[in-house]
Image (cartoon, rainbow, N blue to C red; front, top):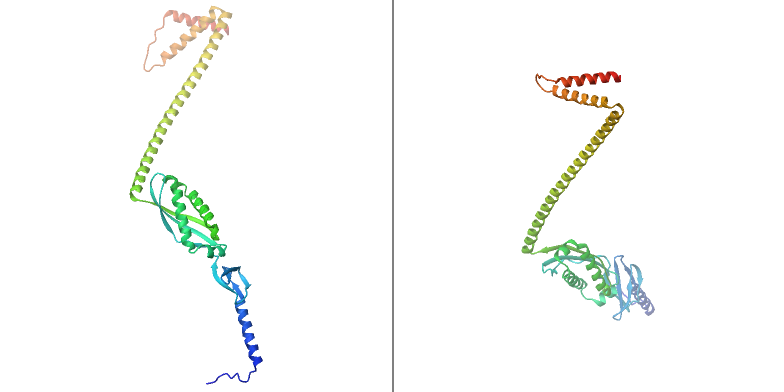
Length: 296
């Protein structure tokens, strides 16, 4: 078995070898390469000395040591469920999840022991407090506002722990079976009420449209009667003017025309008809024709 023989080395050579080994060890202990996803907390004699960022860093060997390696990646808390009672005394179970990352590791490692448990407890308290001020309908309809409130309040609390809350989520709001059945019954009743209101509004609208149509028809009939009356008045005025100019002959002519129109209407009847005319009527026709010839 071969063994190393140091008998040939002088005392100076041994010192040089020891010094070289010491220097190598000092370099090894003094140079720290920190990954991009981490920050290292350095202590000197048990006290905070520095926080090393990503890249090559130097510390004093034998005096300084890396006490904590903290990941700065975003983390997600496990989904937790909190029981809460709304302002209208409804018991709900809220599933929440929070995302955060460490931005000041020296606060995280020296001010709080279990950061995940601390954040979960904080979220539970904030959720119960906020839901206690809201009614069930508001909790379900304004979930985004509730999420914003939770995130802002958690961020204010954990600021002293060197934590940044990046996101908070309400995954679900669960109700007990009795409350769920009551809500379903209420929803069905509301749907029936809306259907009745819609039907009543439809009937009301139909009545309004019918009344508008009747009013429009009456207006059109009145307008037609007004036009007819104006036409008859104009014709009467023309006849009156003719009588005024031509005297009795014009009046006899108009009467004869009316009699001819009446006989024409009688002659339009169905079947064979015999029309008896009085002698006076024939004389009137003769006079009218004579008058017409005289005008021509």
